[in-house]
Each structure stands twice: as structure tokens, then as C-alpha cells.
Length: 184
Image (tube, rainbow, N blue to C red; front, side, top):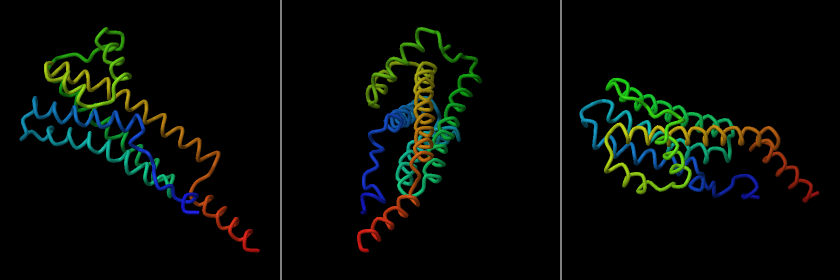
């Protein structure tokens, strides 16, 4: 009955959006260490926004076991943190008079392919080590957009599943009814 009501393993580490959020956190951490003065408030804000995205995916997936509403809310908070980070990256580029890669540019397309093919942080950090700040930001922006897309689809999928299958309260009710039926 324990398995029926509360799954022991949520497998959040298997989610592609979680893996991408970890890459984004690690890349953001290395970007900030390299290009932003640690006394600048943006330094901490960017790292915390990236961390918040990753951590809210974890908490949201765990909370889904007993509260679909809480789980979905936290997954959406993860998206909000991701968008906050995206805005910080866009601000960095804008105030320096630089440009974000256009979606039809070769750089964007190449990074999009790399983002689809790789999910380990070290791969992207190794690339970023030899690139300038604007290139690293553009790399991060592409990864953020991919992660946001994955998170949106996860939220939609979980919402659809809840609509068709119900949630924790329905599982509790059915487990209690099944138990009563077996003892009668």
C-alpha cells in the first residue's frame, strides 16, 4: 500500500529539465566567477536564480507525491527563477551594447544542437573556458530556453495526468475503499 500512496523514488534526476538546470547552474556559477565582481549584487542574484530553478524542480517533484498543486506550483517557481536568470543575462548583454544570437544564426543553431546532445556540466564549462563573456551568455541563453521548454512541457504533462487520473486524495480514497473491500 505504501507504493500506491506515496512513491518512494521520484526519479527527478532522470528528468532532462533537471539535468539541464544543473548545467545552467554550473555554467552560471562559472560565468559569475569569471566575469562578474563578487561584490556586485548581480553576482549572487544570478547564482541564486540558477540554484532556485534546480532546487525547485527537486522539491516540486517530491511534493507531487502528496500534493499535485504544490508540486506544480514549485515547478512553475523553477520556471520563474529560470526566467529571472534569463533577464539578468539579457540585461548584461543589453547594457554592454551587445547582441543575443538570433534564432536563425549559425551560433544559435549549433548551440541548440549541443544542448540537445549533451547534458553534463563539464562539457559546457570546458567550452566556456575559452570563450568571452558574450559567447558564454549566449550559450546560457540557449540552454535556458531549452530548459524552460522542457519545464513547461513537464508541467503540462503532469497537469494532464492529474486531470485524467486524479491525485493523492483520490489514491488515498481508493486505497481505503480497497482495504475495506478486502476485510469485509
